[in-house]
Image 1: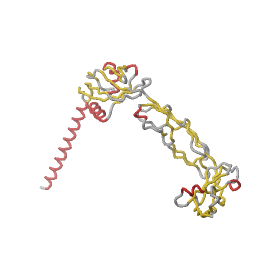
Image 2: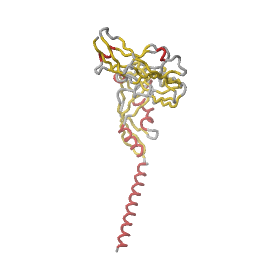
Image 3: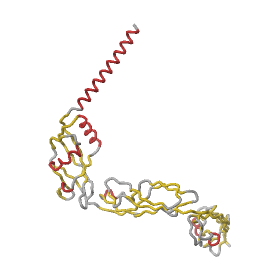
Length: 317
């Protein structure tokens, strides 16, 4: 009895697998056949019309009867049910109606059928007589270029200032509503590591949808210099202290660290003055003042003190 039940279960599995296989073959066969059906496509035009935006502000609907395979019909409906068709139109085929409106006739649209419906589809009839598109005037703005970079140097080397871009700004073209939100143009990510000398090259600009740039890329120069770190102890001075006031700085001396190009042009200890400004004390809530420097005539890449701020105790004389 148990053996009969096991045999029955195997027979049912074979039956369902055979049914599934037959159904799959039937689907594949039917999808490979040709059918005539209606297809609706939203087309957004792209063109190079002097003084106007390159992409139309509106899409236009195309209603057509096509003969193609079932596969292609499914593809068209899935593809254009999710997004618009971007169609590159020759400016000569776009006729000016009035204002910002331009149109193309169904007859002129026929040469673009392969772009819309695919090479294998036969367009039997286009029911849409005329397609109208709006191409507003193109305006422009000059905006700065911002480098998106990850640049690092080898030990004992440092960037000698910011990375220089040429040009450092570009002109952007587009509709007023699009340009209102663009305050800068960004580069693609630039990664340079372990640098021990100047490096230069080109980096592409990150595209913004439906906005044109005067440049596709910019040149960059990352200046790199070898450095040495010098340190000295300095007694602090205080400036702008009123004649009727006395001040005590805690601490009165700080350790200063200077990053200088190698070899250094001069020794900071011989020319630099470190001080605090009484005016900083007046605006400080906690009575702490930032240590400042003046007088150093050599080239400094960076400098710091420990501590960076000191307590300032002020009293009347």
